[in-house]
Length: 198
Image (tube, rainbow, N blue to C red):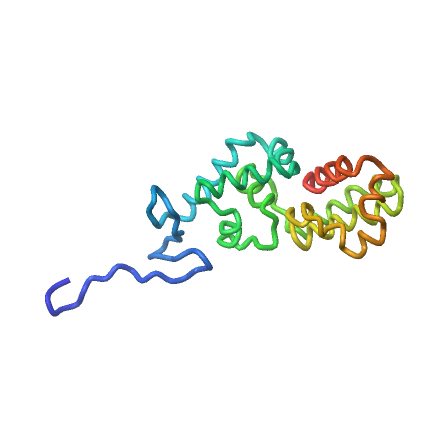
């Protein structure tokens, strides 16, 4: 700008969500890199995060197996966080809050159709009706309850002790009901595999 005249200002940033700004025509996100806060395009942030996930699971089947193993899933999330990536933040930016983080990565990393948590539960119930019909009715109540808890709270809801305190699950017998059809940890692993298969 000139002296006393009109000043040349950069475009004003508009808040586009909880963690992004729009500058001109681009969407940017503030991240910490090399000890500094910098603005990078959201597309670059997404691409870099997905590339990090792909280093741990080459295809959708490997990713699904990683995801249903609590320890491996938490390790992946910890790796992402240590590298200054936030899956929850990306989910917010992508307006995918009705989706589990699994579907965020399945969609962006492996080009799978993303299902909302409610859709994934519906597919789980419909696709596994034969399984439900073949096992103890109380175990079926627990398994369907697990699907519903996923719909409400995502993967994390399946990995908390409070899952077994949900009234419908507790009243059906919880872990004891699952033990009628197999070792409970194995049944849970199978159920999670089926839940994410759809």
